[in-house]
Every structure is written in C-alpha cells, then in structure tokens.
Image 1: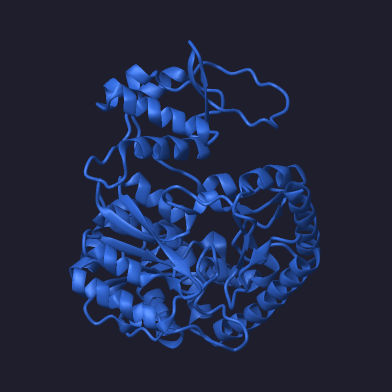
Image 2 (image 1 turned 180 degrees about the vertical axis):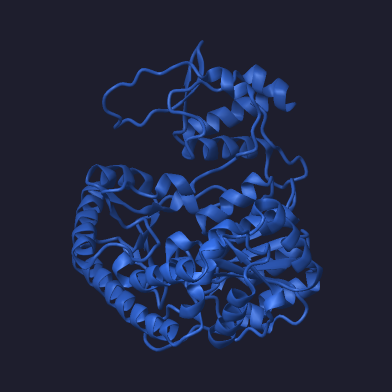
Length: 481
C-alpha cells in the first residue's frame, strides 16, 4: 500500500502514516476487518523504517482504528456494535493497486433516505421555488426544443453570467463583469477546479479548523499539506496565520467566512482585511467560499465580502445558487481576475466542456427579477424560525455540559460535548434511531477533535426537527451518563 509522505513536513512520518490510514478507514476506503500490509511490506513499499511503521500502527491501535493480532498482523477494527455477520469476498489483493484517493468523508455523513437528516446542510424542498422553476424549464423547452441538443459555452451562458454579476453586485458588493465569471456545477466543482489548477503534492493549503468536509477531501486528494488554523468567535485567528507565514509559504488559504460551515461563525471585518493584507504580502491565493451571504437573521447583514475589498486578484470568489434555489440544477459561479481566471477556465474546459445549458437558462428569469429578492426574504424568515425552534429545544432537553454556538445566519448549529467525549459514538447510536448529524471528526484536516457535532436545522420540517432534536438530546444524555 503506497501512500504519499512529505519528508519536509513538520509533522512526523509516524503521524503522517497514522493520519493517512485513519482517514482512509473513516472514509470506508479500507473496509472493516480487512488486513493492512505487514509492517515489513509497508516499510519496504514506502521506504520508511520498521520502527516508524510499528509506532504508526501502535498509534492507530491506541486511537481505536485497527487491532494488532499477535502473529497475524494488523486489521481494521470493526465497530463493536456491529450486528449480524456478512460473508466477505477476499479483495485484499486490491490493496496492491495504488490510488490517489486519500480521503472521502463527505459521502459518509449524508444520512439514509428515510432518516431525520440533521446532517444535511440543504433546505427543505417546501421552502424552494420548485414549481416556478419547473415552469421555466418547460417554457425554455417549448421556446427552444433544440437546447437539449447543444453544448453551452464552457464559461457559461452569457445571460446567466450577467444575472449573476447583478446579483453579487447587489448582495455582495462585488464589482465584476460577465467576462470574469465562470459557471460551475455548484460550489464544490469550483473548489475542485481551483485545487486541480493550483495545488499539487506538497503544496501548503491553509484552512480553518474545523472546516467544510468536502473541501478537505479535495485538497487531501491533490496531495496538499493542509495546515489548520484555529478559530474563535471572530473566525480564523489571523494572528496565528501571520506567524505561520514567517516560516511557511502557503499557496492557498481556503475560508468560509460568512456563516461558516460547520460552526456558523462570521469572520469579523477586521480579520477579513488582515487576511487580504497577508495574501498581498505573502503572494498567496484566497478561496472565499460564500454560499450563505444572503441568509442572515435579525436584519443584520454580515460584513462585506473579502472579494469586494480585493484590488489585485488575490481572491477567488465562489458563489452557490443551487441550495437556495434548486439543488438538482447545480449552479455555482467562480469570480476571478487576470491569468488566474484564464487558467481556471482552461481547467473547466478539461473537466466537463461546460455546465448544462437548460438549467442555466431556467434560472435567468428568477435571478433577473424581483422574485429572487422576495424568495430570499421569505427564506430568511423561515430559517430563522427553524433556528429559534432548535435553540429552544436544546435549551429545554440538552443535558448539562452540552453547549452550542448561536448562529446569526446560515443553516447550522455547532454543538459541543465535554472534551473527553466522542460524537462518532453518539452518531452510531443516533443512526439506530434513524437520526443523522455531522460529527466533528469529519471536519478537521489533521488530528480531529471528536467532541463536537453539526446540527443542520434547514432540511427537516418542523415536526421532524422537533422529534429529531428531542431524541438526539435523549441519546446524548444516556451517552454522557
């Protein structure tokens, strides 16, 4: 089993091996019960000492990921609560085939079809303008049946880019042009395009800690050396980033500054300016992932976007429209400048030859009319009601020792258990009651913190939300006891 090791990293080889294998185990890339390579074989294939591998395996066993059986080897530990038995075909030979998938946490935390999805940072279908958009798609097909037989421009339909330009100018204070906008299949593709364009093995990527799970997946699979920066109530601690820049040379900083996923915090205006100044002084790029800028509560808009302050093209701005309008349409946008824009456009061409034209066209009337303003106003009210409902339920039913962050917008609440507890264990019990949430172990690029969870209040209806939060609080209470 060949893994990527960075011998210039400050992180020891022992911890690199342990982190790499633990991420593969959590992602399901190494099946429960499967046998890891022997210490000798792993040492030979990855050109590290037997002692290093032995210590890494011991650390994995200490953290509960593997079991060392004397005379037999190392095996991925099966969950103690696993019921029943499954006949397993011997696929261990496949471990000899190298791959470049180091991590895939996102898919593990989606929840089952019939569960109460407190894990899903998406919006309940009843809050979306689905009927209107369906009519628009039908109208587009009636007026231009041949649209299904054409590719759209790689950069995206010009009229859609004009509508997005107007939207970000109104809501995000960003002055741009349609020529600087690339339409993507959601924000996730935007993150992937930036990574595949600018990030290679060993490049330093900075993220918040915790951060968006699927972004970690992308950067890790590019072979990046991810360095997490702690957060407080004002977001990423830019003073720690500044100190880091004295000894390291980051290539990219990924930030989710407005109603941060997963914690819901907002990067303060002062720190937004500090982050941009650091990018200018140290010549790194910033990915500003801004999916929820418009979803604010209490009539208090968030600070201006980092991109609106950017005069020199340091910020690559990602904007999503799918979740707030139509998830199946998968519409997002990249706003960038100069040669960065041209290189991203080349990457987009290689990735998919352009996003689907039909769904782009269907969004134009909505984005270009007052319907968007009305929809966002109603959405803010509906989500604020759900947030307040969740907070009241937590205040009433959560046991002593459980705390949470009150979000001022977005879709999520960050809940914390005492430091010595593990929400992975709570999740297994919750899944038995058909409830899902996002455990904090999925949200850290390095050694994770295990005692937090993200609850999303946006997807369940009011009855499911009440049922799910009350039941989850009961599960937490029993677990803490």
